[in-house]
Length: 113
Image (cartoon, rainbow, N blue to C red; front, side):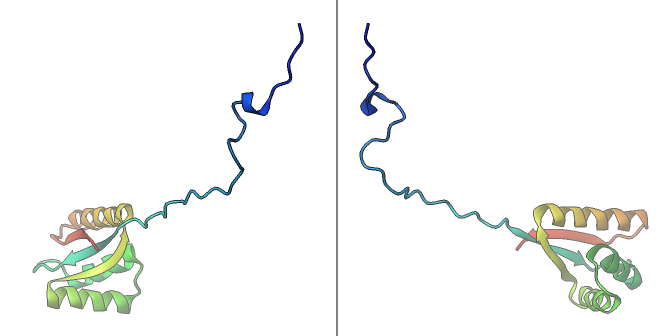
């Protein structure tokens, strides 16, 4: 029995037609949506406590924290940072937990930017 040589056309991995340049385009990856973290004013939480929260959880210096605290006090709310969903969610939880442990009604929320 003689073996016949395998032809290019018989091979399953053989390219069909002329070899060309791949024109498949890669889809662009989208940036994840960002979320604003907001502090809301209330009549009971001490201003010093709000300043402490801004310094501790948002890495602000005292002057920055004081300015944001005054904005919250005068306007009723202020954006204290913009983060990815997971980071924003964690910051809100940390602030709310810390405020509750110190028996303050401070509210911290997040919303899509």
